[in-house]
Length: 238
Image (cartoon, rainbow, N blue to C red; front, top):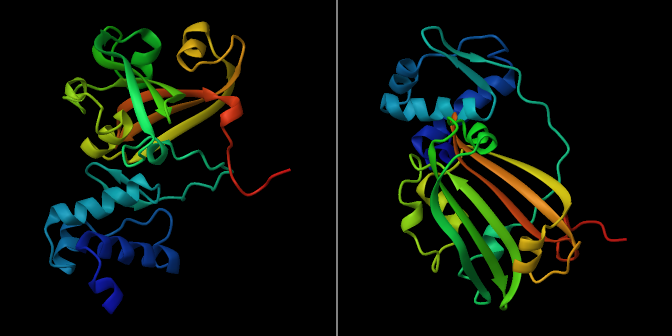
């Protein structure tokens, strides 16, 4: 084993080993890879460590696990065109001395049909709901509404969010294994426009976000900001 791999955590060494077999063509699409027990013995680690390596590769779309049958190599997902979204977690952080926020809503509520479907819950199940306005230099910059799974983030409502932003707190409690985004141009309604200090019919950008931990949804949120203050990507200026 190389010196570089020696400094990696053991689960990362197993991931690197499996990826090497895939990239070399030694293990092909449809092949069953060695069992977690075999990998744990080969690398002298616990089965849980081997399982973490295999699960992370499954989350990346390189392997598929089948109960009772084993783990198989699958066709990796095709690359898709993407844009670089603004890093709001960094911008709306208390490490930024100009950042502040205002809590509009922090409550428990029954999930409506659409939100329940997005969270993978039954309509009417209790969820956590928050609305927070983020500001930079005391100027409102973003309106953020979140719907959160109480089971995965149990003390979400007990935070006052004066030291950490809601999304940063969720990521700290339970790191997402997958995140989906949707970008949309909208006209903000009167309530949101008022919260952001915008005039009626102001164009805005809405970023919808859904985060997952394995096969369970952690939260669904929508962030709305003035279209004039948002720029997606930073390579091309005309």
